[in-house]
Length: 112
Length: 122
Image 1 (tube, each protein chain N blue to C red):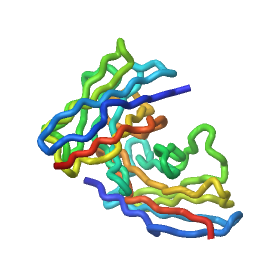
Image 2: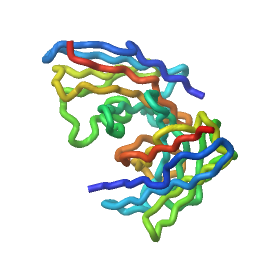
Image 3: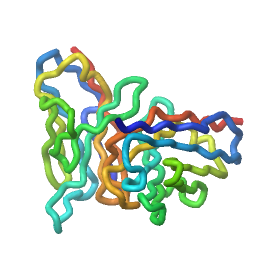
Image 4: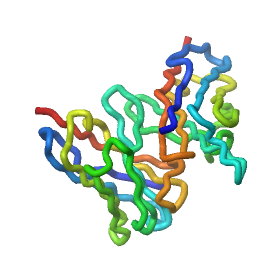
């Protein structure tokens, strides 16, 4: 199985500041035939199901604010929130779909 | 608007069986794969199983293969998860999730239900 490891486990960022969450896969999730990274990001607020933010590592889902962006390739990926808003407090998960499905352990994001 | 509504959760003893249902609306049901993803209390997400839009192709996590079965009734817009030989470690909220594609190989999930809680305890 591909193991997904996120860092940090939790972070606190001031309102309006940048938040960065990292995700590393135990093997590459870049499929050479189509040059796509099989990596998605989700946001889960307390008491709610996850919500898709980003897929193919950097494609923003419809309706997701443009302060959310994804980057990276191969085994190292980043979710960036450019200017943290109060409603962004949540747990964030990365997920690979290159081989079956595995999720990272989650990163809890709070306001400093 | 896509809606997924899970039902069938409950409390049962180890070794028991349970069938979960997920009824969908707001999209062409047979055109998309559906998956089950679970979340143990206070823990992270774990993919359980996926079924293709036609129902022909299925896939399972190693932790449930041979114990769980997935099926769908496209005439009823419903997907099922039949769980047998349940273990304490199967305790979780079970989410139904719509895949972005029709295949039985899961990709990413663009809509989720609210989940149904399954508790396995003696």
